[in-house]
Image (cartoon, rainbow over all chains, first blue to last red; front, side):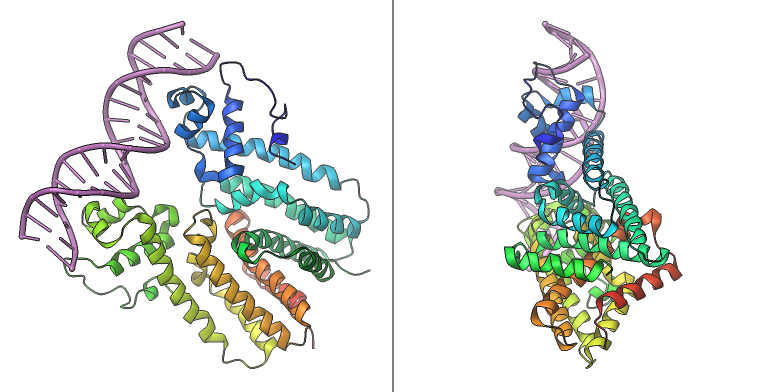
Length: 200
Length: 200
DNA sequence: ACCTGAACACCGTTCAAGT
DNA sequence: ACCTGAACACCGTTCAAGT
């Protein structure tokens, strides 16, 4: 998943002189990935798009409305991504292993997610992250349940697993001076799977 | 730990007419706990302290310098808090259990930490959180090592445990519509301890 | 040693006027 | 249907002048 992938035309379309609301939303998403949520400001965006900031307000009533539109765009894309790849795998332990591997190695696909976690401060970000998190929790719970755990254990293990995922993204951001080396990282992923995926 | 506890005089001292840099730093910390890092703005703070914003620049060269001073203040306090309570416990599993219990039940002491996690966006916040996280990781690694794990396993288990801690704080913020009920929460904490603390 | 008050830059928002 | 340009509010920053 690259940023251009979040754009239906792959980012290659020539825009005509005039802009649509989608153009603004996509530009905002790009900015989030590049510089974080705080960087989404009307005036810089307008400069980037080659128009004056006044024109922004024809498309959106406020900066917040733009943010919300950008986040909805990301959420839709995100949902299709994750659920598409894993639904095919029938065995729950296999599916969990694949999920861990996917999450561990597709670093790029987590850039925007990480940026949103950093900006949980913002009221517009919280509901989106909340919905995405809830869907992922439900998915994990179902898999642990299918792997033979009780309803309670499956739910708690899902919470623990997802917390570990979110926390790891945070730590990677925080301890970037102490980022794990390749072999060390692989060993960590193995340790996590051995600890959290129930044995046969 | 309450907010007033982060203030040496407990917040009850009558200020004389004039302010010190510490007064500004403490006011900033209070604001962080109440409304988050983004709320630390010079003009509102000046209003709150009953002076004009111009006077702020006698004490600090910039808003960022104020933020950094406030965070240093918190970091010092935080360090004494956590390491004071646990050093007395000799048995590593006991100490780990106590740590989990402490973290699970002293909700108030995590308010500022949570606020900082939400604002990881800000360059001034990252190094502070980085240092605090590194100290806690080291503490966890040492305890797991003493509990009989190999150096590698202890380090990985510490990473997983701390990631779970950070992630859980995030989830509590994110899923506030789905906050766990008391019994459900206790069951979750038990599950986490059973999964992450090595057996005898 | 600490504070005021006026100034300027930057960004969000509004709106009448343009094409 | 979309954009400009000027205006205003708000906050960060500077600084000469006050006590």
